Length: 332
Image (tube, rainbow, N blue to C red):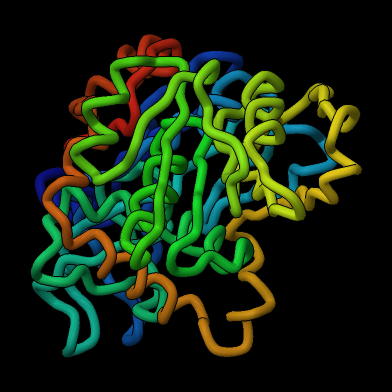
């Protein structure tokens, strides 16, 4: 017979706490039981996890279209859309047990918000020493921004306009500004983004002053008005890369005017499929390491604007999703 103290100790080793979206605009912390760790698995103690203001807001509001329920599943998600679901994909933690090369390492993993978890070692990426654990939560967004540039075919000396100064737009602009000779302008309705843009080496403009004749345009505002601005910014035969995820509902796309006479290209980009130009060579491990390496810049700390204790998440997330910050992190 197991004594109560030993039973409690055993449960503490196998139990974890996870954030679940349990109903419309409602979330809760629930206990989950960890699976047994195999010889090629890692036990990770979470330090930080990042909240996607765009995607997770759609989950929180029950706006994931039924047609996208399967494609929108996050790695290691539990439950089904619309509710209840254990969702999230930006976790950073310390490996407490695992194959010889991993214990003690800080790693990034596409895992929901949970204080401890067990995953195959192949699904974690070691965070470079030059990247603090807190900043490493941006890796998933950085990977998406990197793939957007692969889809766009960006190059040196390009005139690039990015419409939408959320985390994805800012990271796309940040990568663009590293191209030799590139001129990158961030366009946003919030004038407060101007100082942040300047710190990242970007020009800034409100929508009414958006420059035209751009070689490439990235749209990341998730609004019809932003899409209209993006199309208006494009030069002759330019490419407009749509990065927004709108969820349910129709979106007006202004395809009249000069859209056809300028022979514009409007393409979608998201990280579920890597650009064909890189797909044969950039597997998950390689592109994740590339994204993490791009985060070795102290200026990117400014993209994390909100920090919430994990225990306070159910009470704080509704206000967070109605706010206008950039990236929020949960502190474990």
